[in-house]
Amino acid sequence: LPTAVHPPTAIEVIQMAAHVNNDQVTVNWETGSEIGTLGFNVWRGASGQRAEAIRLTDTLIPSRGSTTTGATYEFTDMTAQTGVHYTYWIEEVELGGTSSDAGSVRTEFQSYFYLPYTTR
Image 1 (cartoon, one colour):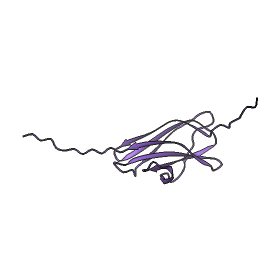
Image 2: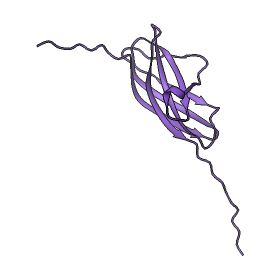
Image 3: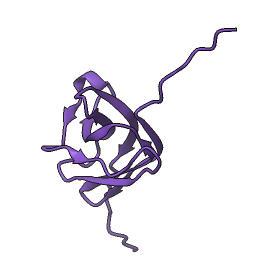
């Protein structure tokens, strides 16, 4: 019987999360392995549609993983607006120049309005 051989994927994302803290969002991700990965870009969109997202990283976040070990990464978005639902995408860029999305996460800013408590 012939057996199909599938080449390994360039990256294995183990975990991805976004945390809201004051007026910023911190996106964390962890890889299990990185095969031929040059680095990462972070994209953000308010509509949830990848085609409408904007790239937040001015320069590539360099890869620190290898074929046998992964790494942890962090990016802080200081331009996010309170009260807006955002989706963040991690784009992997390979050594050959090709790129693909490695994962996405959705988050929301929570804003609170406090009223004074008075009694009569």
